[in-house]
Amino acid sequence: MKNYNNPYPSVMPVAKRPDICFVKGKGSWLWDSHGKAYLDFVQGWAVNCLGHCPDVISEAICKQAETLIHAGPGFFNEPMVRLADALTKHSCFDQMFFTNSGAEANEGAIKLARKWGSKYRNGAFEIISLENGFHGRTLATMSASGKKEWESLYAPKVPGFIKVPQNNIKAVKQAIGPNTIAIMLELVQGESGVHPVERGYLQALRELADKHGLLLIFDEVQTGMGRTGSLFAYEQYGVQADIMTLGKGLGGGIPVAAMAIKQKFFCFELGDQGGTFNGNPLVTAVGHAVLETLTSTGFLKHVNVMGELLMAGLQKLSDKYGLGEVRGQGLLIAMDTGMLSAVDIVNRMLNDGAIINAPRQCTLRFMPALNVDQKEIETMLGLLDKVFAAMTDGGTS
Ligand SMILES: *Cc1c(COP(=O)(O)O)cnc(C)c1O
Image (cartoon, rainbow, N blue to C red; front, side, top):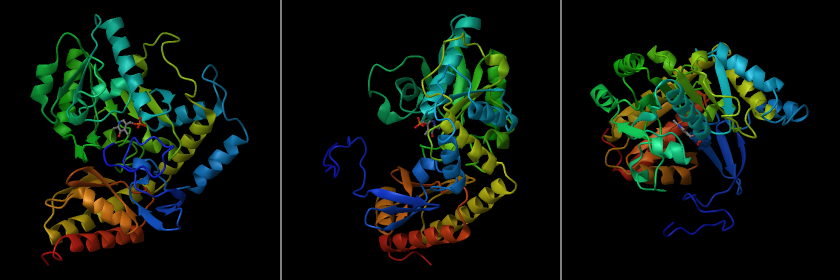
């Protein structure tokens, strides 16, 4: 990486990390090795849905660590079955395959679609995915992603992915050919800067998929597990997928992800799919504790109330300083910063003890813990106000 002085040379410098080392976290707060506190509205990339080190997770880890940590992928284990049962009960899906990351869950979905194509559709293998979409960092999921910067990276790409612009049904119709087997998309594009798909578009995709015998795959790695205010984002659209992938919030900070499918699409032969740590009891026990919390009475209501509060506060700041659009759903929220550099804002906020994210040059993203409270949101808005004031001449009001 150019001009980057890595403060910890034994750690491979794959990302430009600030010269800070975190040692402790609780709820919405993180502390670095100098004892400085940070209000964290990134939460490990929308992962820590219950904040840092919540008691339910610490307790689930300790209890399971004393009981059974790993049994191997060739055996059932109790927490694996418990989490699979609970996820099927709370969703429209019938079967779960657990993985260690969102990318690996998406790999599973891609493999299932290709298997379906080879078994029932004459070898069809092409998957239509969206421009600016993000599906992970394995070779196949990078190929499925629509990130411009990745187009020539690690060439040659895994073939068989056709990209179309979001919310353009005509482009999908034109892209469907005899080799098409699936359509794969995020319901709200997270990494591209929080861009939701339109309801009518998603309904039309479902109809197209049914008409042409294609599998519809929802990547809910970021939008799932309460992030958008319902347990899964698809519930708000009233459209069901054939395959859904989960990750990020599922383990609340512990690496566990899942591929969920409707029973009728199961077509793997025994041995086609697997992985050493898949469905490990330690991580699935945590996933179950997280799911129980998210589905407890009033939890998702709180996500929506806090989301509206944060959106309204950001909109006020945007009006005050003449910035851009505020958009989002639940607690996945973005704000366009107009003339101001979002990267500058992120750096200034970090200096002032707050963590936010800039997915684009002029876009900020907020992904606080789902149990964030009103006071923390007000603190965040106050810190932003100060930074915006310093970067402009004090606002227009
Ligand atoms: C983060 C993300 C992934 C990749 O998940 P990893 O756990 O990093 O592999 C895939 N899809 C979407 C929509 C994501 O936001």
